[in-house]
Length: 228
Image 1 (cartoon, rainbow, N blue to C red):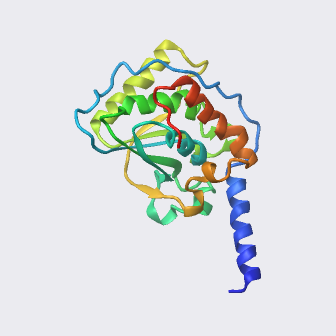
Image 2 (tube, rainbow, N blue to C red):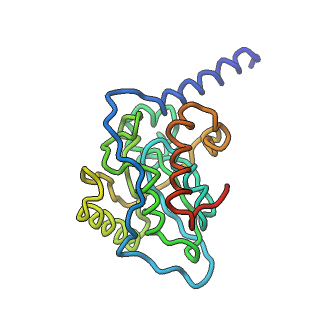
């Protein structure tokens, strides 16, 4: 393949990437980041180090990954796709909004350092606006919907209880629309999506939408914040 073709192919990929995370429309006003109350129903910290996994979705995965890479107790955060089939777990196909996939984040964490409920508290406080239906900030489509993909009954119980707690307390102006559904599979996204915010802090989208989320994490949860 000639260098010209390679350059064109890379340019085409980056156009798709930017278009996917910069879809513009009549953007509904987002809820501002706020430190939400702790979950009334949660796990207790484990007595010994270990690894557990949480999978969530709430808009372009660049920002979700950026937030959780700065959370103490998180071992890894991987961007990917959940909700659809393996055959359609490709960025260009997911971006059509017809695959049932959501741009998702797989978070591996140490339950002796942070609980599942604390992860959800951070998620709803600074990483996403759970009141926006099938969109997040400028990004529109079902691939940007808010979802908690639970791996077991314990995770489902915590997620359902926390959403009910926040709705009852009316901490948001509008009702939470986050789905709580069983995790069937998680498919990692393409390599160029991984660590995108860390690698491209000067990207206008990252600077405007995602770096403020990391700053809000540091401000609102200083005890859980770490440098990457």
